[in-house]
View 1 (cartoon, rainbow, N blue to C red):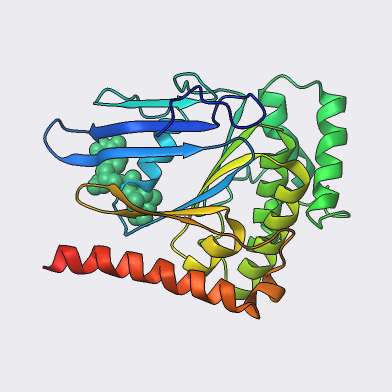
View 2 (cartoon, rainbow, N blue to C red):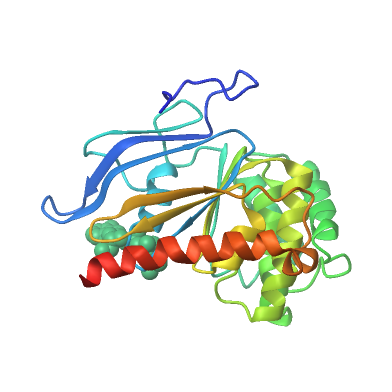
Length: 268
Ligand SMILES: Nc1ncnc2c1ncn2[C@@H]1O[C@H](COP(=O)(O)OP(=O)(O)OP(=O)(O)O)[C@@H](O)[C@H]1O
Ligand SMILES: [Mg+2]
């Protein structure tokens, strides 16, 4: 595998380079073992795997929230990850909106924390709320928004920050099936528009296939990468069209087989 400073084709460092990384929180239980994962600039990679295999831990390492003290290396845009890096945006399953702030103020918040002047942040947040389908809801408080609408605000806030790398931990995991499909479509459009690099965690295999350029399969105890699958479906994509695409279903089934073989090894 290439090193952390390998050119991505546009002479830029890799968005994320993880090389032979192992991690233990308590010094005895291995959480991640010999994990290597390279994500190019602009690439969308999903991580799937059983609960507890270390997906969130890997995101936290990339965000600098968990210090890496074990074997191997992790680099984000060519540098050791540090907490608060403005080039990294993090979005979670729960919207984490501030209940006392309007949709507009919530969408502005990330930019303001990073020092963007108020007028500029407001203009950008308005445009992003429009982009996520929430024009007219700028002054609404989270309690008056549906869960799906709140996740749209969280998407607006995340994309408004303009970070080159987005870490997304099951952002649609708590939504009902229909709302989830709508937000996956929205995410496809946002990524097409903004071209950020994304490391996305999901338990939903069809979601992983639909949104990704590659899907990485992990297995647990300890967390290891057991497959790295190219999703060679053309873009732009639409969730509705993908449902009718036989290749989408082939990739889904391939992914299932890799996950299943990980389970049976544990049972054996
Ligand atoms: N701060 C921590 N201190 C100690 N152990 C931790 C810490 N964070 C995670 N772990 C352990 O590391 C392992 C991986 O946890 P992690 O949250 O990364 O899994 P996950 O793949 O995200 O699971 P899920 O799909 O349920 O979200 C688990 O065994 C967990 O108990
Ligand atoms: Mg997790």
